[in-house]
Length: 375
Ligand SMILES: [Zn+2]
Image 1 (cartoon, rainbow, N blue to C red):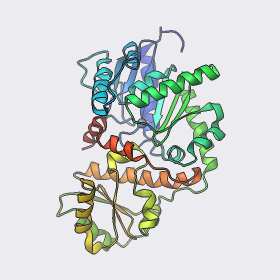
Image 2: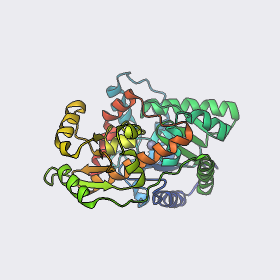
Image 3: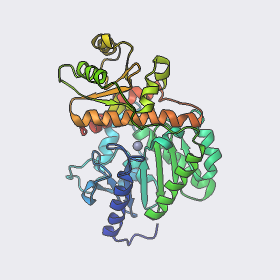
Image 4: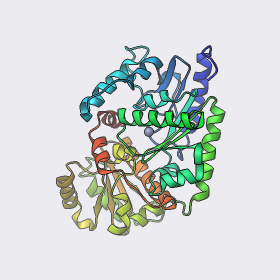
């Protein structure tokens, strides 16, 4: 970075432009996913949790004290997940320049701060997650990007992830003499960092075009012809007398995955935290439309929650929610999961989140907060 005498209103203009541009591209950003930041030596401006990149303005960013954020990683925290994350969150919140600012910084604020470059763009695109959720993700990252990208294996988000990334970034600096500019997070997404938004764009375009060359099969998301009458009657049953809003996905890929239990198996476990937040960890698979209520009841007994996605044999999938937005978001995120599953075929086949990670996310306060913002 070039000194600390920078013009804050100028970097905020660039930050808002970068956020709006990528945030309005559905190939890159869905729902409240992804976040951005800009910084100088003293201050980090990071997206507030629950705001959308597509429409964010300069007021959607939280100003944070970088010195205080740096100190967070030097602290010792308890090993108990709940205690550690609560204290960690308190410290991250305490690093806001204005403590009375009601906005909550993105849970990934600390990761943004670790990069020394001025601008950081963090995304969860389906194409990139085909790689990060692929069995050969790590080896293909090495082959495709050699030293241009750093791979970070799956771990608990929050404090643990920030610590692991910090270690990886320090190693990289020791080894190459450069700061990390592309960081791929297994079963999560990607970070790009550079001193100008144009250079961030170049990094993104380079990764996207290299991955596109590897793709052996593109997901087919165009809508197919459906039996409207069956869709209507299934939707009616799933809505539980109008209690839930139900959205049907009739994409070619949704139909292919719903053919039978075996075909649906890549979709039964989650790929990334986003899929858990908006679709819950597991969808229910319905073999026989005569038995919808009893199948859902059995699922509820097994998992302890109502599913948000029902894959209905031969009929694609149905997303449901308490309101329009919740149902639409669940549908969009499950379609994203379908795309990740298809793209992962080009990177060694699907590799889902580890069970203990799934459990952690299900119980993580930061993600419940994100979920609640989507009502
Ligand atoms: Zn993320």
